[in-house]
Image (cartoon, rainbow, N blue to C red; front, side, top):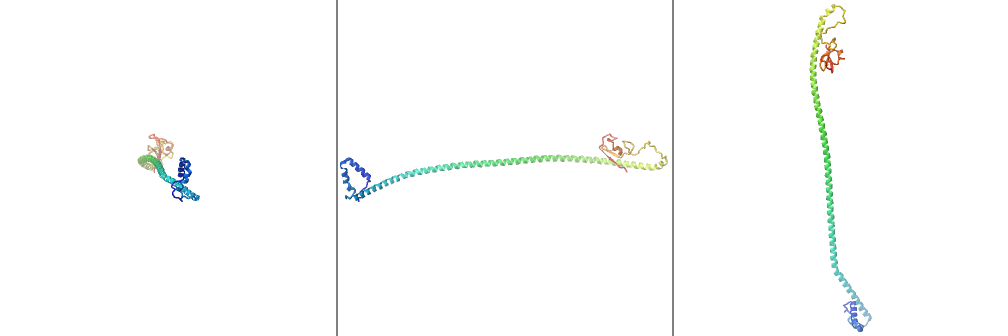
Length: 268
């Protein structure tokens, strides 16, 4: 088997075709003459076919080597393009993530701000409501305090009025006591006089004139002027009426002022 074949079969065929164009009459002879360059000079067709097959196989391997070398040469370009593509995609992804992060931070900040604003507004509303309630309570307390002060002043005035009336009643009681003492003294004098005149009355006639007016020695009623006075009239405090006249009299018979009440004095 020959190992001198270093060119592919297509190259040999193309070179033979060129030589055939230049010398068409000798192309077949040259191909047969040049066979020793590729074969060992034997005319065995089986060996020739083996050598030819080996040449074809070599040409196919060379094509594969050429294609693999071309693909290997194109790998750096593809790697560079792929690296640029990956880098671009990484940059875009990083930009997208950064943009989304900024938007998320901005939205969170706005949401937090709205939340704080709502909390502050709620706190202000609650404080304002409580302040208004406290102001209403203060106003109510102030009104109640003023009412209590007015009531206390009124009670003070009433106490002073009752104290003045009590002092007046004390004076009136003292005057009534003096009048009663005088009346009791006069009554005692009359009783003594009647005892002294008892014997004289027995000696006189038993006939009594009904039209005779008995002259009273004690305080007499200023209304009928026939009975003893036993009632004190208020507010003038005049001791001037008997029991019968007290039930019908509307004014004091001495000062002619309207009476409000009366007190009966019992003389012993």
